[in-house]
Length: 208
Image 1 (cartoon, rainbow, N blue to C red):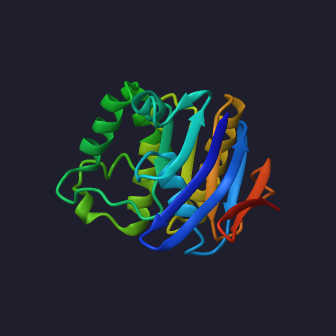
Image 2 (cartoon, rainbow, N blue to C red; image 1 turned 90 degrees about the vertical axis):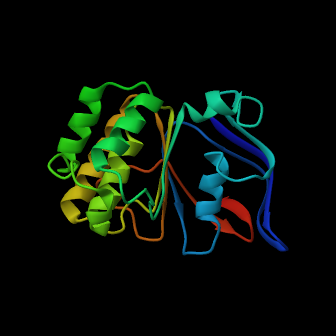
């Protein structure tokens, strides 16, 4: 499903990632490890946000050769989402609906699911960190995508929202989707069946 080949990423003289191949199929995959290990960099590479050396393919579609088609099938929720503070939650959700050609009803159901519907009329600048995180999760799951990348999805949200996220992830996997999680917090294996667990060690992705 997802294949990365000959990946090399540097920030100036600092090399962060350097590996020959990494592949995952559909299912739930957890990339664990502390801050500064390269997890967010890896997600930004896959989502096409930063330049890199190498190749990324999703279901045979190359990020570098067909960037628009590739991005149309992926979703990336940042660890610390940053949105324009002067727009409302509704305006952001509307942007995702249009960009992903999604049904408005689906977005409304997601907002209700995460108990955000009554806050969407407010400007994002008024949101707490927990509300901001839940808004990012609502946007992440809008549309029919093949791969969902959730960077530190468990931070700043309460236990009830975490349980809802776990259930939503399980639903997506039953639909044949791929879920890639990064977290330095422990993922509850009682509530979420992980297919693989990885860690970045010495710039390489290692299955553990």
